[in-house]
Length: 79
Image (tube, rainbow, N blue to C red; front, side, top):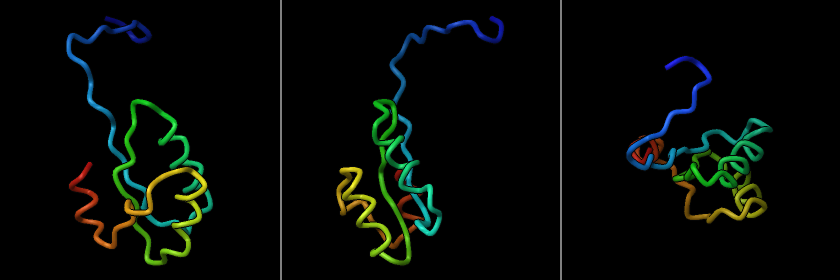
């Protein structure tokens, strides 16, 4: 095996589970959109102190508003 070789896995890989934290950063929407569009990634939650910053992003991307949670520890456990 050397860098660049394609590797065949004998078992299907599970999806990468991600959360979005802190919507104060202007790129969070783009990052979540890319994750949502990737079939190998599952967005399992989002967290921010201000839901007013989160809901427009979730609506635009097509993610469910129920992904928003105030409990960051709970979201981390989902990954």
